[in-house]
Length: 179
Image (cartoon, rainbow, N blue to C red; front, side, top):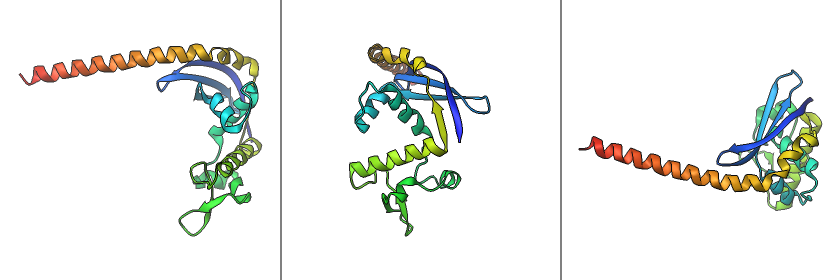
């Protein structure tokens, strides 16, 4: 199992909204960057029923999700072992006469999808990657969440105005070419 060590955390914008970037050092000394929307911890708190004050636990969930093996990823399943959701009996037909672990999209119930997700997360932390989180590095970005959302709104409006201006320029060019 590889161990990644968090060395830097900062905030910024990605995909049109506030985001957090986590830089980690891999066992071979190279860096791994993990970027997630700034609302990820709030979403995981709601999804898992965890108090938002439990930042370290929420970060562990959010960061490790990147290494979870999807039940359709046959290459990674062969590399890291069978889907733990299957061992729990949380399965659906795979369309080829067999069974495959459920996901939040294929489970019969929300608790089944949740249990499958948690089993994959635990499997990931035990056998694929363990990310060591230094909460002091993350505290500064967690304190600025509301500011980030306000900035994101302004940034999105600016991008929309910029897109509108580009569209007007393109239309003017087409009109000039058609004269």
